[in-house]
Image (tube, rainbow over all chains, first blue to last red; front, side, top):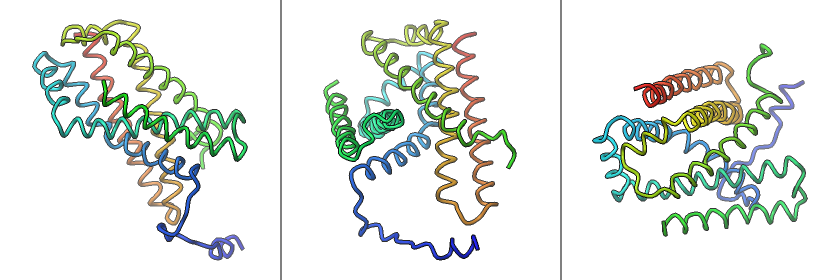
Length: 126
Length: 115
C-alpha cells in the first residue's frame, strides 16, 4: 500500500518552468548558501591556521586576501553568508510565529534579499 | 533507528541554538576586528590567545560542526531518497569529515593557546 502511494505521487521537476514565489527562492538559496559555506570551510580553516602560525604565514594570508581572485571570491562568500544569516533569522522569527502570515512572510523574504544587497555594498566600501 | 541520533526535535533545537550563538559571535567578532584597525601577526594571535576569545571561538566551532551535521544531513535525507545504503554511506562520510574538521580545529586552537 505504502509503496503504491509513493509510486503514484506526481513529480514535476522541469526547473525552468517552475515559478517559485520569493519565499521559495529565499528558502532554496538558504540551502544552497549553507552547502557552499560548508564546502569552502576547509579553505577558510587553512587560512586561519596559516595566519596564526607565523608572521610569514600572516603576511601570506593578508597578501592573498588583497589579491583579485580572493577579493571576488570573498565578495561572493560574503553574499552567500549574509544570505544564510538573514534567511536564518527570518526562519527563527517565523518559528516564533512572528510574521508567518502570507503577506508578512513575503515582505520578510524580500527584506532578506535587500539586506544581502546592503551588506554587499557595505562590503565593497570597506 | 537507534534513538540517540541527532534527529527530530533535538536536531531542530540544536540547529536553532547553534545558529543564535554563531550569529551573536560573528557580529561581536566582526565588531572587535573592525573597531581595531591595523592588525599585525602579534596582535592577531594575541586576540585568539585571550581566554575569553579562545573559549567563545571554540564554542563557535562546536556550534558550527553541529549546525553543519544537521543541515547537510537534511540535504542528504531530502535528495537521496531511493537508496538507504547510499544515505548511510553519505551520512557516514559526513560524520568522518566533520570529526576530521573537529580534530583540525582543536589543533589550531591548542596551538594558539599553548605555544
